[in-house]
Image (cartoon, rainbow, N blue to C red; front, side):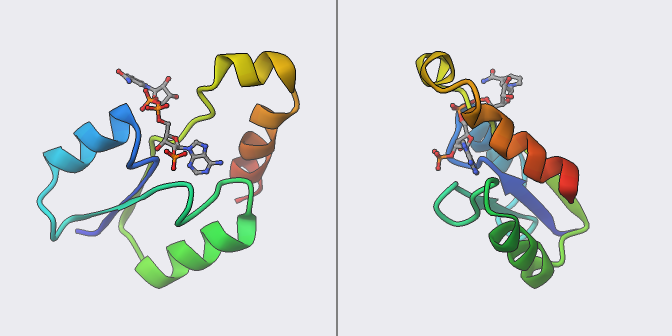
Length: 82
Ligand SMILES: NC(=O)c1ccc[n+]([C@@H]2O[C@H](COP(=O)([O-])OP(=O)(O)OC[C@H]3O[C@@H](n4cnc5c(N)ncnc54)[C@H](OP(=O)(O)O)[C@@H]3O)[C@@H](O)[C@H]2O)c1
């Protein structure tokens, strides 16, 4: 079983990766697959061909949300497209 974990550098993603053996799970940071870039995400998924995808990525910058309320919606819009 192949598992792809988005948000692997975050608190939840790190704990999830630790729960799988290295053979099972591949972790991705935003530098490897940015949720705001649908092409990057799709090509990553197509290459990895995972059985499961775990979305542990999230825009968690509360101050950033207040300064630019549109920013968190960019990632959500991309997830809805796919
Ligand atoms: N922490 C908990 O105990 C816990 C428990 C249950 C549920 N959750 C939920 O899990 C989610 C993540 O929480 P967290 O505490 O792990 O947050 P976090 O430590 O701030 O981690 C956020 C993760 O999301 C990634 N990310 C942010 N923007 C991204 C983008 N545009 N494209 C791809 N990856 C992106 C970050 O990658 P980079 O570091 O590369 O930017 C990082 O890996 C949230 O929805 C939270 O509500 C958390």
